[in-house]
Amino acid sequence: MQTVAAPRGEIHFERVSKWFGRGGKDAGALRAVDGLDLDIVRGEMVALLGKTGCGKSTTFNLIAGLMEPSEGIVRVQGLDPFRNFHDLRGKIAVVFQNDRLLPWRSAIANVELGLEMVDMPAPERRKVAQLWLSRLGLSGHEQDYPHALSGGMRQRVSIARAFATNASILLCDEPFSALDEITAQRLREDFATLVRENGKTAVFITHSINEALQIGNRIIVMTRPARIAYDVTIDPKARGDGADAVRARIESVLAQ
Image (cartoon, rainbow, N blue to C red; front, side, top):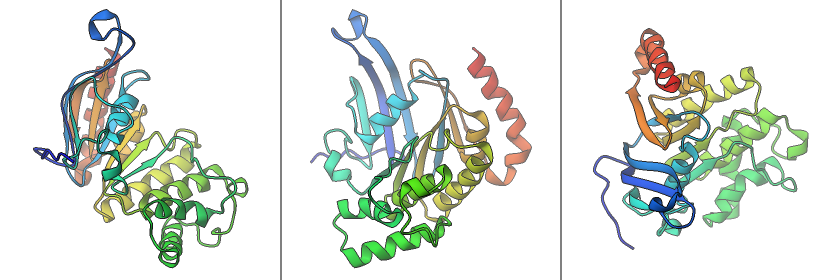
């Protein structure tokens, strides 16, 4: 197992490119990521923002180890996430666009699923799952099955499942896009609070400027093919004062 130290933090991209199709980059293949340099430090909550098709999801999959870069270096906690996928088990948790709950398992059993995968003993699994369902406001719903839960409640179970594993990195692929705005706003607030309180590093894919401004302490705007067009860090204490200027800049970049 080869470990390469990331210069600044948890996630490191160095001149990363990814293309799809036969023949390689010089034979008309689709280039999804182009020479991307990126460092994400521990404790950051980064919103990757961009139009559909700009390469956000490909970047996400490269971090998660679900695909290998065509060129360049990707490191997560110093490891190649594709080649050392199993060594990062339990260190990365993913929250998807849909909840991906198993319909034959209760809410608490769904939360326990990730803990089973890291071989946590059953009594401890149940205790941890109960704790996180409670923290996500689902006390009393532990034995409910997904069909009996609202969309927002199911996504809360999904978030509880991610936090329960105690993974240091959370990857979120537009997890609130299928919810109504009021439910989504409450969930974003709860999610951001839990990330801060538990010292997690989070990468959050979105195509919504409002969502990026609400949840990110750093916003990276990407243009196709997956290049960084704007990278800004927002001080949470001064978020209201600078939000209008940041929004205007984001809108300008996305309009190009």
